[in-house]
Length: 134
Picture (spheres, rainbow, N blue to C red):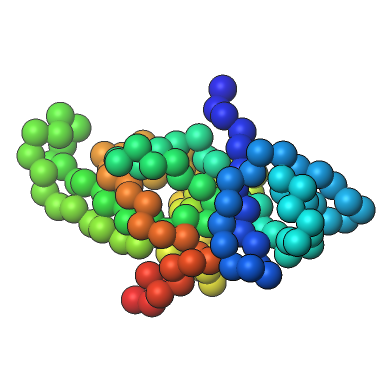
């Protein structure tokens, strides 16, 4: 079973923080009873996965995703590597990767992780949007 946890982006003060508790106030949510950000928070859920450096991967993270392709199933001869910048999203009831915020195609984690891959968190869509300019 994976660990369920969140972090939040406060739009008003422009910072990310770990969430210890959630409080629902009508149709709004308050993380950690942070009254200065009520209605100004965007929650990001932990995927339950860590990148190659041991960093937790959250919804909204920007990752460098490298797929390795081999000559055959025994993986003795590497034929190519493809590296791309992807965004971690939660859509269609699962976590996946998208090439951009406008991209409608979802590469489900279950599919992406079934290959030989490297994944590294390099930022997030709120603090590091410049990483998406390619």
